[in-house]
Image 1 (cartoon, rainbow, N blue to C red):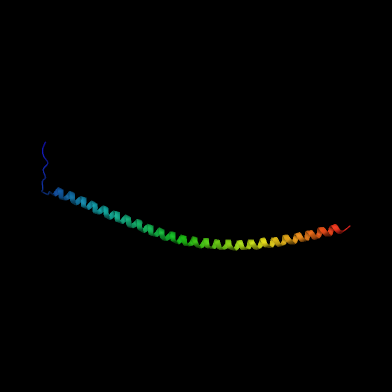
Image 2: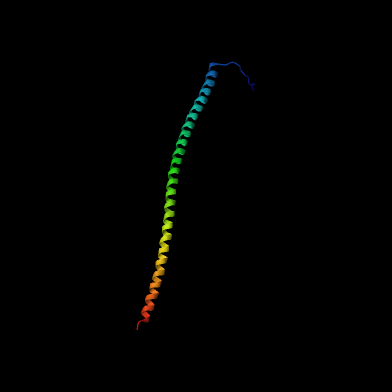
Length: 104
């Protein structure tokens, strides 16, 4: 079996191979950088759009909460009026039933 020998001479093929690898690595790096920059730009636009949507949704939720509070207070007033009317109707019913029982 023959021993391995190292030949320290550089040929044109060696230089071309090394330069092709270096150019490939550099090209890959720049392609990666451009794709990364596009992805970051898309993400920033999406975050900005989501932030705007969040602000609109917060405003809508605030309006709905205010409307709900207003509706709740109106409902309490309606219930109070119904209780008053119920009491008046009970009084009227008692008065009419006692009046009808007194007549011969």
